Length: 523
Image (cartoon, rainbow, N blue to C red; front, top):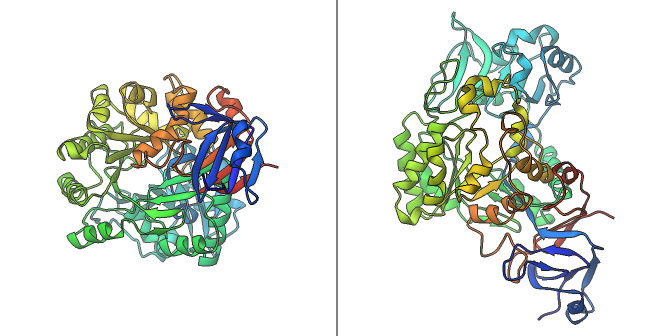
């Protein structure tokens, strides 16, 4: 064996490789795992230039991966005042009073729908504390926002608009905008005129964010948007990206053959620790925004429309990309959306097995559970989102769905029992990027899902390792500690399989290695 660059020794290694489940030492060369063994092997491996890191009993596992994140696009989403801690309308007003304007605007993000206490989202609820300053406040789901009158005026929004995708400028009975903007096309009207962080600011924040992610044990993220390839490539050429990024740019309703060809052509573009691999679709929006596609309307009579006005056009786009060998991921939260995606994949035939995935699937009926394994469709889920719901059903998500559908919340356990690949993530900035919280809430779901069984410690770990690799088609190179796989490794002070969920969220991260580079060390 050539001399390793790095040796990790004195560890309790959980390889997730059935051929050798446990070890105490790992050797790395040129970003790849070169050998897995015991302390007795280290002397033979070591060379004069080898860095040796003693882990002193830390628990070493395959590098943890967030299977759904937005670390580049999210930098703009998470701009301004953090409203994630706001619990009610009084708290919202207090936060806005103290907000520091950004280039003459008040910007905010992370606002919980429940903060409106059951009232319709309306600009008049907050305009009295803003003194005429335009404000644009993103709700936590990333699919809706509240814009004040001056912000709407700056964007020239004076009434309803017609869009080529499921979006709405919500208006009152007289046709006046309430300020509630639902889905991307409607929000983009104001985003286009609101202040945007400079390139230098986004670059600095990206490096800071990825380093902070690595400090929680993350070595990779499936990025469910196109990001900013120029920005990523610039940073990756100058430094080691602490988190490996795999981008899936969006395909939106109305995409013509030329746009689909461009998405195919983009596949494989990348550099060190980043690449474009896959395409992201939206089949619906969110339950709280009234845009999740449901088999039956929610309590407000909403939720009966797909994000693609013509769902068959979505099917045609998926088939075209599939024929070109492109993997797809589709946002589908409501039961009708999930069913439609599965039907489309079923229509691809046997060669569609294992190449497509569904994101979120927050409420799924029993009949759909076995189809994930039958069709080889991965279920990509975000257990931390359960914190936006309440066990007593008084939250906006639960009230809209009703007790029956809310009782089918985040069925990670049921999907695993049905044989599905279940990849786990955070959807940052929708929820914290701390992967330890992802593991913990997968085992102990919160809110509406708190009465449902979670995953075992091993299954949760697999959701961020082997199952994440399977969902990305990377089982030959990632997800296990075995020779020939990428040297993406996470060392925790506590055993992620046996520590309690509460203990796990506080477990020190001793070491994070991405592509053979030590990107975080807890000294």
